[in-house]
Length: 563
Picture 1 (cartoon, rainbow, N blue to C red):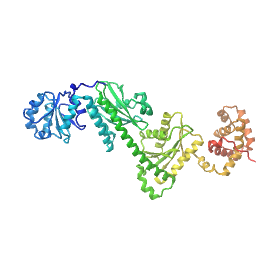
Picture 2: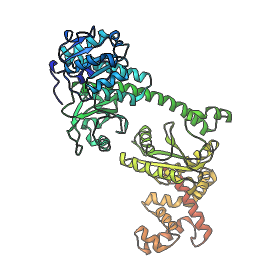
Picture 3: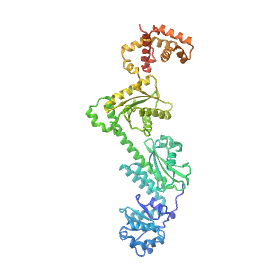
Picture 4: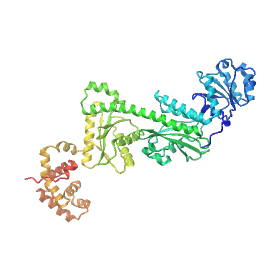
């Protein structure tokens, strides 16, 4: 980053960036004009201008004098000013087209400020810059923060804020969220940087300084600005990046970067990054608060809808809260963490939103209480469950990348053709998830329609008569295994998985055929069943399935032997 110029080396670009109103514009002379400014003078009359100014002065044309300016009358004077030369003219409001064309033909720089700006303001601001660049730079950064904060309050958004910062610095300005997705980026009109290559470089987490890769550590760091070179191929001159985390609360919510030729980034660019990040934090906090309020209203409606407690007229009245097209058919997915010490549902929600940002179909995401996540994904048509299955696979892959030590369990059902079908479809997806958890079908979305007989057994499992049947039928095997560290229940499961084929069952259990035959005899002896009889095989198989549906805590306890 270059050292700041001495007061004697202030040019037109510095005046535009650091002294004039933020919405000032430049015409004539070219944006790249590096005309140095010696001092500032206020012109009082068009006659004898050379007695009022010195070479390389920046000349203010007061509004009353500017009103007398037109291309025909002013051409000799403007030509003389260009030859003198003056550094440039400061004019107020719009100029006639002919005057602007004349300035461009003479390569005479004209800086246009809003017509409500006073001559005194311009004179003071430019004088401060010429006398004390550092003080002027700090004052400009404060003005920038005020304007960005006002833009946030007025709801202009991050895109408009980056435009202002890019215009003032003359550099690329990018705002990224916590996942490094670009939320807004502004490019100077004269940039020659490969946009795709730069965008890809910014989205690589390893380009962040190590401390910024941890969002909480970034918030606690005393350093507010990081400076680095961007390793962009064929970047000439070499690109520099000034970077600041956007801090809200106890963590970084995103990142602000000012990017330009490394040798030209200066103090004002650094202050822009620092003050800009603070203003963006306000915008992100406001956006988050609005989204949380909408999410709360949406969540209240969804939970009432799924619980079946809302009258139809109330559903029709509140449906708009979803901000989502409910007329399309939907798949409903329920997913949660399995096991202790799992990450929060908020982190799962963030991962799901990340997947949805690149998913072809829209979806609603809701944390149901503190228990699990519910996803309502719009389908292309009533026969399209493929897009929901694709979403399920991508969620599993993303969570596997982010939380490799954690396990998820999920259920899916659909299509729900209308909003009125959502409660039933949700119940089915929830049942599929709960069955998947009991059957240890983890890290996948179990589809309700694939559960087969388990759908029937799930409803029967809690009935006292059914529990008694299970205890009496398979209970002796469970009790034997518990007392003898045996594997008879596992043997029965393998036997039915292989359709009663002794050779295949023995192979799957890695035991000798004779060992398996001994175990089968022991199973028949303990249960009192002859497995050659179909009805007895069915009874044992059903009791096994019912026992597998029991919660883990129940299965760890061997049932008491029947009297």
